[in-house]
Structure formats: structure tokens, C-alpha cells
Length: 138
Image 1 (cartoon, rainbow, N blue to C red):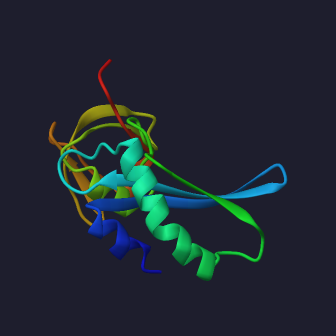
Image 2: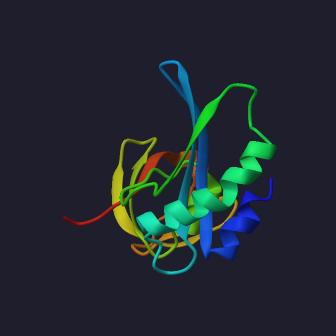
């Protein structure tokens, strides 16, 4: 779909999407980030993107079921589950749990299609990672 191109027009990146069923309702969630170093999105960003894409989704529905559109930020401490998530998170602090049950907190320096490199010198293949999220020191 052309949603990625529309997001770019507003200096946004689509971080993730999901179609979820809650009770009797379907919800199409789109999680967005600002494109660039400061990834924080505002309520205005979410509203503007929602208004831009709503007519397109009305003409090209995702499902035959009625659904509600929800546009939001993925949050400060967001899960990284796709290679694209790692690439979008370069320069951020990550909290990583490895399959060896090790926990690492370090800045992400680089991410390619096979591995990530952290500021502490650690290089991990995606296959060795159990879970990852961005991390904020509180």
C-alpha cells in the first residue's frame, strides 16, 4: 500500500502495524515514529496521519470486517521484533535478552540484515537474540 509514502510526506515512518480483534471489534493499529534523530511523535502527528490515510483505507479496506483505525506511537520502550525495527533504532539504548539468558544494555551502533553491533563491542546475530526493547534510564 502507499501508506509508507504518505508517512514520508509528513516526515514520519511506519514502525509497525497490526490488525487486532478486541471483543467484537477489529482495530487496525499503525505505530509511527518521526523520521530522523528525534523519533518522538505528537498527538498532532498521529491525528494528521490518521486524517490523511482514512479516506484511502475507506476505499481500500484491509478486511471485509468493520474496523477502527488507531494511529499512535509505539512508546518510549518499544519492542524490536523485526530487522527494520533495529535499523530504525540505531543510536538508541537497547535492553537485549539473549538466548543464553544474558542481559545486555548498550547503545545500538549499527544493524544490517544479519547482525547488530553495540557500543560495548558486542556483536549479535539476530538468531542469538531472545527479546529486545529500547531502554530509557529512569
